[in-house]
Length: 199
Length: 245
Image 1: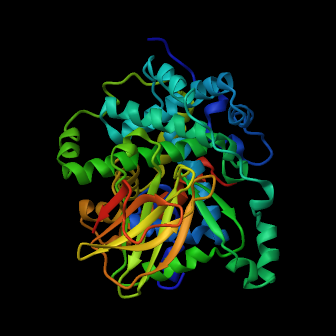
Image 2: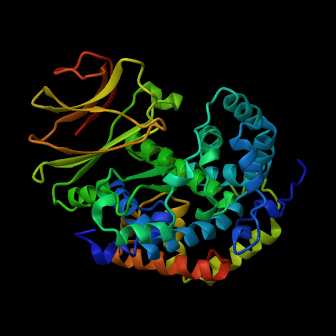
Image 3: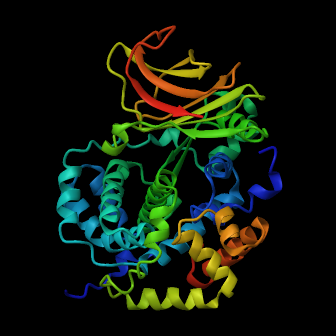
């Protein structure tokens, strides 16, 4: 399979300051019912949406369903997007992660976590799915994650990728809830300082 | 917020990570739109996380795009919010100085899949009620089950937060389809097997609804049915949403 490079447009940090969000125009057009604009938006966002959903949900076919829901939701709400509240990529990433979490949590309550415990035995999708080459982004994120203390990083990853609430993370790490809350907050502040995120 | 004034300002990171349980999520969503510090936190943390998300990018399956495009071709888009109903910060500050008059005027916070839009005055009336409910030791939050329509993705989401000792409930609904002409949604509190009519629910054209209710009994279940526009004393229509405590 060919290697797809994510353009500047799929980067999340472009909404900062005065730089116009390159996806803003496409989303506005999509909000007026323009299918072609939405198709372009899909091309820009799909690698990220599918990637983050799969990372959380793990099961490929369920991940596809969730990713599809995310795009239909983006379409429905396109006209309601407010640029003051973050870039289009940030909005889409928020929606994708929330939907993935909702899926995992409803699964969990339905199947009492058995499925997840099993899926945890499956190798990380790093090994089985071809990644989009986003060398720069990935290197920056990896570097930023490496700056965290091991405990901050563990707590953040269990929450964001593992789909656990901070209370569950506290149980998993066998530390007090307050400690996890602090670790998560300090870790996010550090990540923000490394990666940017100030608006 | 009343009960957790100190704590709640530290929940922005966990919220952005979707790492709050449902009760805290609701409380934080009622709080942060009117808190400048928390709003800035959430915005910045989400921007940061979107870079983490971008670093997970993979090639989507080649068939996904076709399915997405086919589904959106059959999906109605929501109308934009009108500018005079979207309140910016300066406007909200101005209104705040005008006192509680506007705040009382049916202020509504819409939470749309993580995007947040403020309407009306500040703070929203329902948010205070929600904070009061969630501050009670016996507070519960329940997402009502929409059955098959949830899978179809067009049934909307209805949540109820309540406290039996506080004798209060707050209903939060999003994406409710418009009721047919001459009909309305009605909410039922079911205690000891007896459905009590709570309210006829009139969702806005955009399907969002926030209602504060007084309750006398401790519910075993909550239900929403479709009824004649004036409501019914006992449920007659199809049960659209049901949640058992």
